[in-house]
Image (tube, rainbow, N blue to C red; front, side, top):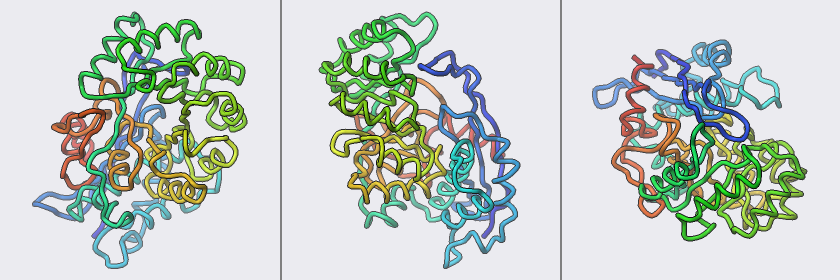
Amino acid sequence: MRIVEIKEVAVPIKSSIRNAYIDFSKMTASVVAIVTDVVRDGKRVVGYGFNSNGRYAPSGLLRERFIPRLREADPRQILNEEGTNFDPHKIWNILMTGEKPGGHGERSVAVGVLDMAVWDAVAKIEGKPLYRLLADRYRDGVVDDKVFVYAAGGYYQPGKDLEALKDEMKGYLDLGYSVVKMKIGGDTLAEDLKRMEAVLTLLPSGRHLAVDANGRFDLPTALAYAEALEPYNLFWYEEAGDPLDYALQAELGRHYHNPMATGENLFSMQDARNLIRYGGMNPERDYLQFDCALSYGLVEYMRILDMLKEHGWSPRRCIPHGGHQMSLNIAAGLGLGGNESYPGVFQPFGGFADGCPVVDGYVTLPDVPGVGFEAKANLYELLRTVAE
């Protein structure tokens, strides 16, 4: 049993949308295919992976460091003890050989891409959906039969007025979502409140709307928004300040008393632990958005979950960023609180399997071996081109 080939392609995400910090007109993502010599159902097993939106394709890191390390590894060193499958933990250690602690930047994205592909291959070799494999290995076989998902959108876009924003959000509600998220911080507070209030006309209450500032605010601005947002009783107020400014987050938590969310731009267990130690987050109120595809993959994500347990946090307070099927599998298999969804943007990566509709804010997963990419036609079409 061995890896035959590893391929990487940088794919453009061409979009005119923007959040409070960046536009996505030149954003890219890495797509990886790990080709094995294992055959299942008459087909060679290929594991696929990609990085979440918001970080550019780490092609150089993949091609110069991490893919060569995996290619050069002794095939016996990457297998489980029985020699019947690849071992994601051993592979992770090989990928990180020669890497110093700290500096969790784009390196974590490159490893996360490969880690996703490895887990996809491992589950396919076992003939199980990834969520089932994770539940069997780490949760005594318990699988959540459905997962809460919210629809993320509400980006700033040229020519997008309040009616267009409302039409977008109504579309998500019509698809079955019960909670929607929109961007703030890319305009004035007064204008953002107008945008929020337009969306709220479609919703039963503020508890069905989340807002995301993408780390744009300094402390005075974060507090000004907090004061204005408090009466709306929103689902959450997300990433007000720089993700590494734990003091800002802690101070904000002393003033804003409704749920907050952050963590999508923290890429290691150590940074996540610092947020828990110093960020003033409340395990009974707030949400954590660490994204395995950006933070060294599922191997590291499980270390984060272990750390959270030690600090009194339930995995149900984790609702990952990214809107991809990998996190959806983790949510169902390891008992997270839900998952982000991008039904209208970042295609073909956003959204879940075809034929699994969202019903009252929840989605089921297909009974397909691996992550389930093959059940999402537009995404699988792209992934196949990389492998072939």
